[in-house]
Image (cartoon, rainbow, N blue to C red; front, side):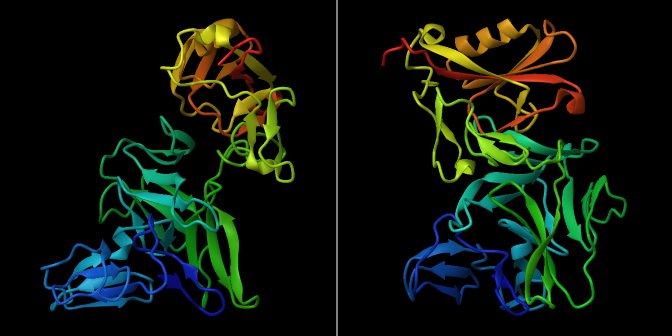
Length: 364
């Protein structure tokens, strides 16, 4: 389903997104009242709205972009607004437990790893990992039924339907007369607000909804790819001796260890002797230790390094401390995504990343 004024249509909802169909596929409202997607006329049903037998009288798309199945009394039986993919339209809500899930890439529309969800105490954005790694958090009082609504000028979280006072709000640019807006969670982790510009006859990004700190473009999980280090939006590898770029011409694609360390717990019992740590001073993880596989508090840097070396699932450790390096916090990660250089005088803490690599004497 697309949002169209003129020019290039924008896909704002799609069915069967995980396994797209090919040419010749058809959508059909069956005699039993179900909206289905078939691989070909009369062919296999690959997606269904699940409304069979519910007295569906018809389907329509409103001016708000909502695809609705309704009965003979005009009662809504199913609507696309309840099943968002990667985009929200004005008037649409993200319900508690639902997700906005970004595309894998600009050319691959299957579900990617980035998602946004309303949780009991926050509106949060994650990159899917084991466990999920959070990069955005907007907190509020614990409310198990909370949901977010995109309206003209705001993305607001409410406790329950009918409430007029939000739990928290993100202020947005308002929709001008004669124009259209939508927001999309994209594969780079940004939730961008787009607006139709009639003078340019095209869609333009007008606002970045998720505000991160430091707000320098380096706080997103994939900005420099796996093992990449972001400095003023420029990407590099940790060091040339242990890492090489995935693509020398495109440093934002990330890096790979020259000898990949085993992080499978079934591979060996001699983890600490088979691996060593490459240390990056004044460097932090993309999410500023917001989530981790395991956290160890009130430890020294040496104890933090040992915790990672002794843990077969640990791929990196962030040691985070204030004025006393002997009394810090250790955050272990099972997967290394983008990192960022930090200025201690700006963020008011010290941070070192310790990345596990294969010891030069280790043998497979």
